[in-house]
Image (cartoon, rainbow, N blue to C red; front, side, top):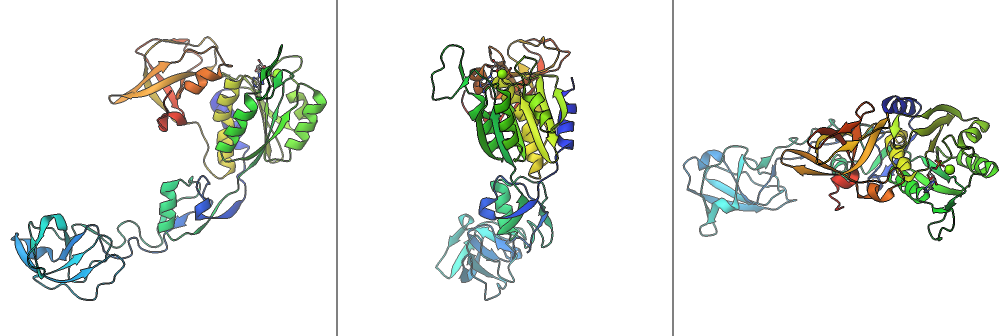
Length: 406
Ligand code: AMP
Ligand code: MG
């Protein structure tokens, strides 16, 4: 049995980023940059007014209030055609280039139009005020975003301003998902007798897609060796094959056996994590295989901890554990597993810190408790309990950041 950190190290050491491909900027969100991106121009490319107001010489306003002669008007997109001389001002709009001679802008709110030809400047301004100087945001040739950066909307704006309508990003990995278990029936069916609904098929497909993979389902193979073999053979055509269930010690847990039959090199098969101790990771050449435990919360948590970082790295990103922050417990936690536990909780901001309310859970099959959680509280193997008021580490889930209600 190896630690979570060691297991993730092994996973990431076996990931080689996929090749890069070009995409249009409009299609780049969610992808990972495969190149450092430099600005092609100074930004802003000219000294730009940040306010609607009057471009003037700051020295003229030292004894404000003062009346200046209005010699023209400049709108955004218009090049100035005259200098601003002593005692003069040009009416200027936000985004317009500062006319030569002027060195400051006084916002219109601090001015009063006198007779159309003159303006009263109510207070003095310092040189450079309300002006974004040429190159103050970035310089031509300066790297604005580095390779490995995930493109989000803020990055899109930076890439647009840097003059990049097309970019090189890591290719999305293809992924295949095979669900095992004789007891598993489709969501649309009513389970009878010993059957249960397939929670992992849809959930893992959603997680794969959410992590950037081009994923497809290979259906349910039951616990039939030949059906599993057929699925594994098809799934090994993808960059990543994920299997659900069939990796523990039961007489019908055949996944590892079948993977070895197909030449998959098994790199670990147990990790000291709860939920989810049985967890198979292997590779065949560049193709990665994850055999996740069948319990749905185990499957989701181990996906997030191990598969998601691998998918990120395949696409050219870093990959790693989600950051954990300290939170103060509202109530007690217990972990008798002797493995690192990830326990469902609702975390909220209180004052300068975080508070965590542990959620009652029926265990690693309780998809409902997990769906209500916005964080997972981490108890290390040696910490068997934590009391109300004590501090624990909380791994914040996307629903925390998105502010989702319980
Ligand atoms: P396994 O890892 O195959 O031993 O399964 C562990 C537990 O998870 C068993 O109770 C299974 O019935 C359950 N399980 C396995 N696969 C799924 C699935 N796709 N959806 C919901 N529960 C599952
Ligand atoms: Mg099973």
